Image (cartoon, rainbow, N blue to C red; front, side, top):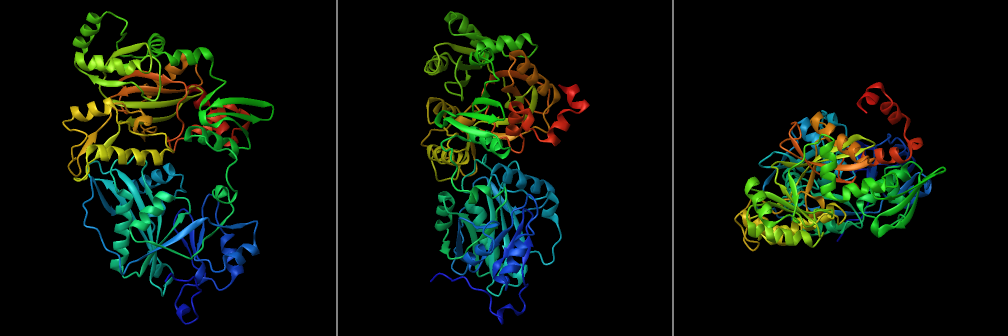
Length: 578
C-alpha cells in the first residue's frame, strides 16, 4: 500500500530540525513535513535567491499553500517515485567503459556544471561542491570514462536523516544527468543503482525522487529499477527559471532545437516571435519597428551571394583560399578518370563529398581504393550531381561559430562511437546509441545504418552482427556531423588564436554575418589546420555554455542587447580585435 503524506507527529518531531530548508547549491530543498505553519513555509519560499531554484517537497495540503499565494507559487507538474531499499536487489552487471565514484575535485564540479548546462538545469557555484557541512547530507556521484577520466554523468543524493533527523529514515535522489555526448550505455541506470546501494548500506529505508510527468524515458527507467509512484507533492515559486512549468504549453510548437534556442532567447528579451513554417524552421522576429525573417540561424542579414558561395563547396574553397586560408587540394569528378586515379595515388586517402548538400549526407572519408572511390562517388551523386574529391587531412573536426565576425563558440566534433557491453551486436549498439542521441537532441542526431556506417565498421575489423567486447570502443562513422550521430565538445577557452583568425578570415572572405567554419586540426590548441567547409546555417544549440543564441539576437537587434554585453563589446580591446 502506498504511503500517505503526513506531518510528523509531536512525538516523532521532538528531535527533528524544524522548518528545514537545506542548501544544495542550485537552490534549497525545503522539507514541507518539518513545517508546522503554512505561513512559515510560504515565508521560506519567498527567501529564494535570484537565479536559484528552491523546491518545497513533501508539502502537505498543497492546495491550501497555493490558496495563500496563488500569484507566487505553483504545484510542480512532477510525480514522486519511491524505491523500497529493504527489497531492492543490486545488479552484478559490469559497467561498459565507465566507473562510478564520488566527486573528488574542482574539475569534477566544473564537469557536473557543464552537464547541468547541457541539460538546461540550474548550475551550482563550483566551490559549493567542496563546502564543509557537518553533518553532510549530500552525496555526489559521478560516472567517469575509464579511459579518459572524463565525467559523463552525475547524480546527487540527500540523506534526510542527516538533513533533519528524519524518523522515517528517508533519502532522495536529485539531478540525475548524463552528458548528451556520452557513448556508453546504461550510465543513468548505473548512477541510480550506486546511489541506492550507498543509502541502503547507510541504513536508509527508502529512496525518493521527483520526475516530470511527461519524462517517459526516465519514468520507464525508474519503474524498471523498482520505483513506485507515491502521493507526495512539490511546490515551487513562480520565477523565470520555472516559467515554462506554470505558464502552460508554448503557442509555437514543432520547431527543432536550433530554432527553439533562438526563439527562447528572443522571447526572454521581449521580442515578438511569429511562426512562418515551424517544420522547416522559419519564423519572424519583431522588435519595435524592426522585423527580421529567419530560418534557424540563417537570417535576412545573410545575402544571397554569401549563401550561394557556401552552397557550392568548390566555390567556397577557392574564395577562402584567396583570403589566405589553408585548404586541402581538391578536384571534381568531372575530370578524366585517369586524373582522379592519379589524385588517389598521390594522396593515398581521399574524401568524397557532394559539392552541394549539408548535414554530412553523401560524404565518404578515408577512401583508399578505386572500388571504394566508385562506390563513394555513387553515394555522393544521390545528393548532388557535382561531386568533389579531396585530399584526406588527418585530425579532428573543429567547428567555429562566427557571429558578426567574432568567434562565439569553438567545439571539437567527434564521429559517432559505440562502446561494447559483451552482449549486444554492433548493430544493436548503434541503434541504442542512435536512440540516446535522438533523445538528447530533440530528434536531430541519429546514426544512419547505411553503406558508409557498414564500411567504417568493416574497416575496423567487425561486422554489424558481431558482438562487441565489453568496454571496447568502435567508431561507426568517419564524419563528425551532429546529424549523423556525432558529438560536440566545447573548446572555446583553449582554441589557438590562429584558428580563430582563420575562421574570421573565412567569414570576411564570404562576407557572411553568421557562419559555421569547419577546420580539420591536429589539436584545437595548435596552429595547424585545413579548411573543410562553411555552413551558412550553423546550429547554435549544443554549444553550451557559450552564448551563441544571445550573440545572434544581439546581431539582429542591437537595441535589445543587455547593457553589460554592450559595454564589453564596445571596450577598446574588443574594437581592436574586430
